[in-house]
Amino acid sequence: MNKIVVVGGNHAGTAAVNTILDNYPGTEVTVIEENSNISFLGCGMALWIGQQIDGPEGLFYSNEKILTGKGAKILMETSVESIDYTKKIVHAKDKHGENIREDYDKLILATGSLPIIPPIPGIELENVQQVKLYQNAEEVIKKLEHTNMKNIIVVGGGYIGVELVEAFKRLDKNVTLIDVADAVLTSYYDPEFTRVMTKNLENHGIKLSFNEKVVEIIGDKKVQAVKTDKNEYPADMVIMAVGFKPNTSLGDGQIELFKNGAFLVNKKQETSIGDVFAIGDCATVYDNTLDAPNYIALATNAVRSGIIAGHNACGTNIESLGVQGSNGICIFDLKMVSTGVSETKAKQLGLNVESTLYQDTQKPTFIKNNDEVIIKIVYDKTSRRILGAQMASTYDMSMGLHMFSLAIQEHVTIDRLALLDIFFLPHFNQPYNYITMAALSAK
Image (cartoon, rainbow, N blue to C red):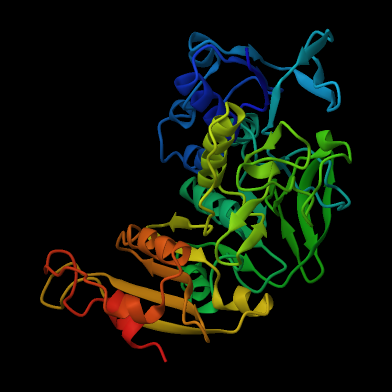
């Protein structure tokens, strides 16, 4: 009998376990999870904190009972201490301090990522919060419910930071966002889009402090203020959302790593050690934009990688199609989506690119309740292959991004896109719609 041990019951781990149990009856599966829950949808934390959903129940799509019912052995609140990759044995310890030994035929590492905690004086003060686990969000909510906190500082202008400032503002807090960059969401969008989001945040009363580095968190037991290299801000709570790093310590220097410390895997999610797979935020993905391995920590990538590893661990040969890093955000009803590389990122990587930018209404002007849409397409200057796309609107145009993701995967050129058969009906779009017009406007 094939025995598979999965370390981690997160998105990726749960996807791998479900794939194995649903498709390969008789396979022995053991899940080792150090937390007290399984499959928490962390990207829904801001909705829970901001009271846009009724509670956290819907943020879990599996649990110990469901997986046990399918036949898995689940070891909750159990920490893996070490792994003997030669003898194929996982050494762990449960919450009672009991030592556990699990042998395996195949091992799937779904160890996820860890919050980056910068070495700032005062980082250990009470009410300086992380945002990663269910327990982190629960703690923040309880403190906001039972205290008189008013001034909330969020450090980090990535997706999580921006989602959280909206959540705190919905609770009528004084919210300040601090970032060393000159804008929010710079990893995914060019200035034409980050400016739109900046204006959106400012219009909703968020104080933005860009080009500032936090140098100290001030307080006596509890946080009282945040000091940057330029200013000082009163604070009752500080949220550290500066980013995450792959959690790969269990590799113990034996598994080959990517430049950022993630487990380097092939398109089957195999690591450099035989019969050992790595999935989700602890591992690389194959980036079709760059035609090379990359690190893109997204829930969608985690789930797909879990499915692929689950099949391969059971003997079915399946390879990843690669990813484009498709992503999106909705803040105070402003939707922004992107895939592939931005023009800024492409130039940082040394790619020779051009771009085309177009703005128009979603529907013909005679339609009432119309929305402006901004679109930008990035393409290779020589081959004219599409390498990235960004869109922004209060209208939900997000489904259009799937086409661009496929275009990047299949090496479609900007010229082919310009002649693509796109339907027209006034209820939906324009005869000369913004996708066609952006492509036609390419140099």
